[in-house]
Image 1: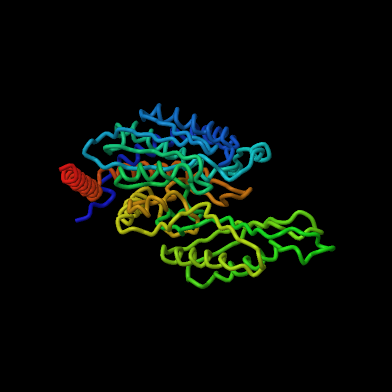
Image 2 (image 1 turned 30 degrees about the vertical axis):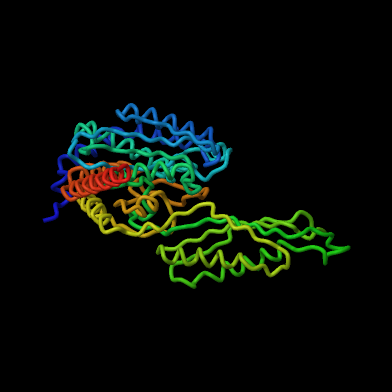
Length: 428
């Protein structure tokens, strides 16, 4: 018989967790103001590293061993933290939060953190400073109330580049995921309160058309217009919408030419491709490559670069168990919770694609991500952080998830045996 969430985390424990987070509420808001009032777009290394130093210090105070991992691409450091749980027989849980936003330097000066009528605003308040904080405060509450998460280990990845596809942190996320039995991605809940069990996959492209410059009035025939070729591509790319049920293609940025009296020799497009299913995303990707092979403009050439790839987060069978834990515990906390699919990609796409049971959107409730009106419902902070803490505890205690751990350890042992046998036969 499958244990119900209420038998894994008791009403008394839920009440104590909520009381602790009620006491922490003012400190949470002060920390939220501190984090939001830092310009930390993905390309603003100094700002992201400021958030990283603050996060590393807080994780260290919680007892975690924190490793900052720099990179040579100009982005902020990735933080990998490992916290010993209170139960060595428990599973390993991976939690992921990102420290970057989509906003340029100067945004904080224009619209700093504020709270009005129970709504918090400011750049990154929902995406995802609140989610990052809820993860830290949930761990602290579990330590205070239960003596620590009932896990063998809790791995916490705070990455600097999620908003641009996690180009430097993805390999570190994948490495941590290989050691985990389940994963929670701490993005905030959807505006209606839903958590996320599946996401569209996405591929971002830069397409550059190379033509030939010429004087547009004296000898236009010697030119090869990159913009004309790019216009053809825009039409053909948007014609892919609807070819597969879940596929969307959008040319979001176009830039080309220098002057009106010069035949343009260069034009670039930034393109977004998304799909719910992996096979549809792969088929549309192949179609986009096909569109860039021939050129309607003679002698022009097209250069196609995939700048980011997230395969779809398809709802895994074992992820349904995590959904059941969350929805059952929400019922006991007094609110109804549903899971949903959403169009945006996140680091959950990476972990789910690896087969790791994953749910996302377990932070507080907010909306209008990436927009000037981005907001967070302040009243959602305590109940949703309580829920997060309870889900972490339930994952640690769940006998089904503990069985996943035993299966994973058995798979590792068998793989090690095969490797030893292969090494032995090759050396003989």
